[in-house]
Image (cartoon, rainbow, N blue to C red; front, side):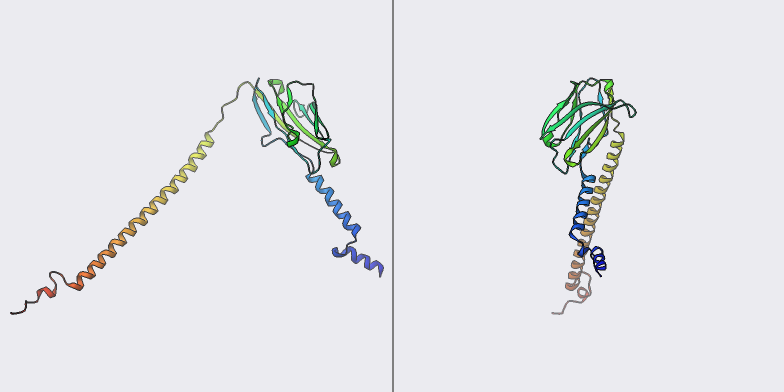
Length: 230
């Protein structure tokens, strides 16, 4: 009987033992943080094209479900996907105060850690700077979870003009459709106005005709009667 009672407690969620309920909650909490823990975002565009000799910003933001004090951030560079990664800058938080380490003077942290921004500025880009740049984040407060995101930088001698023909075509089609709808609306209003005016005139004619018939008019039978003798 005791065994059956225990089975009922486990089978019925309303009779679940407190220890089992706590275990379920802790498991769900851990899974939630594993899925929605640390994240890194480089923006909407995975590639950046920049003119040789100019400056470029490498965007990166991060998010964390828990406190990110004492976390670590770094940027690494690869010439291509098969080449080894080279760390170009490291940011270590002590509390929430950043300490930046880099041996490349052309790279500068311009993001604000307080706003969860760790974007870099690369000054006077060269053709050799073309490659993959990965932004990474590791939070010891979330079981040392790590996240990263990669963007690709292209350095060119001149920027090609943007082909806007498709955009112009789409805008023309949309403008034409809108213009046609407006024209149809005006025509509909004009037709309704004409119909209303014609109906109004017909109504006025009918009223005048009825009034004339009731009082008689020239050429009617009442006029054809002879005048009364004196």
